[in-house]
Image (cartoon, rainbow, N blue to C red; front, top):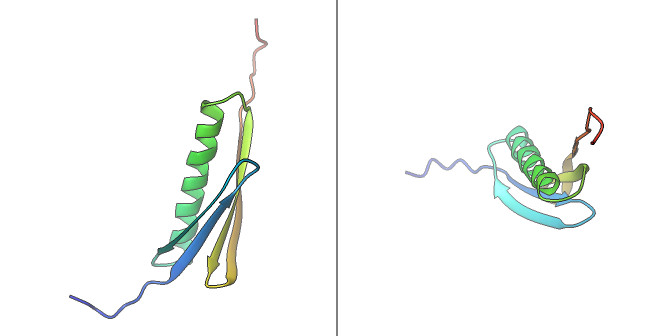
Length: 86
């Protein structure tokens, strides 16, 4: 059944020093698009730290609706050793 309701389309662009990705998807709201972008960014940088020698990582997230930038976030994660290495 088609209710005639069209969800807005948002383009999520993820950028850091090693890669750039972009996807366009329908979301009920900008808040939902931001939550999805932040969760995706957190997964990417977590994998980066777990899988490599990096102790910190960050990713920039831009959310566009059409050509207009409607949200801009930075997600970062750092790991610090609290005990000296033996």
